[in-house]
Image (cartoon, rainbow, N blue to C red; front, side):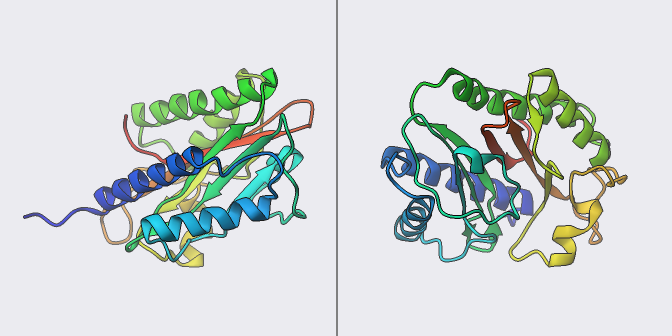
Length: 228
C-alpha cells in the first residue's frame, strides 16, 4: 500500500477539524452569556475528549463583537458574548503529526449586516480558491491582491496583513512560518505552486478576514487551499 502524501495527511486533518467545528455547533458552545475565554476552554476540552487533540499549533482564537476586527497577534481583554453578536473562531488543532488550521464565523441573532458578512465569507473563500486553481503559478502577492480586491467588490475591507500561509507536518519552524515566500502577502514574489526545498509540492491555508465598513465588526474564514 502506498504511503499517504503530505497533502493527503493534511486533507485528513482538515476533515477532522471540520468534524470538531460541527460538534462545537451541535453542542451550542458559542452562545450569549459565555466569555471568549470560557468558549476557548470548552473547545479545548471537547477537542481533547472526542478527538484526542493534545496540541494546538497556535493559540486558540475566539473573538466576538468588535474584537472580530482585530488581527491574530492582538490580545484583547476577555469579552462576554452578547445577544445579536458575531463570533469568530481560529483554531489550529494537531491531529497526529499534521496541522489543521480552520476558521469560521457565527452570528447569534438576526442582524442582517452580520448575516451578509457571514455568507460572503464562504462565497469569497470559494471564489478566491477557484481563482488560484485557474492559475496556480500565480505569486503570493498576486493572490493577496486578488483576495483584497474581491472583498472590496463585495463592500468589505480586508483585515489581514496576509491572506494565508504554508501548512505542513507539525511543527513548522518560526522561519518557515514567517518567511515571505511562505505567506500569501504583498512581498511574496514566488510562484505559489513552486516545490519546497525537498522538491515536494507545498500546501497552503487560505484566510479571508472581512471588515465591516462601519468599523463595528468583522469576520474570519480559513481552511486548506485545495480544489473543490
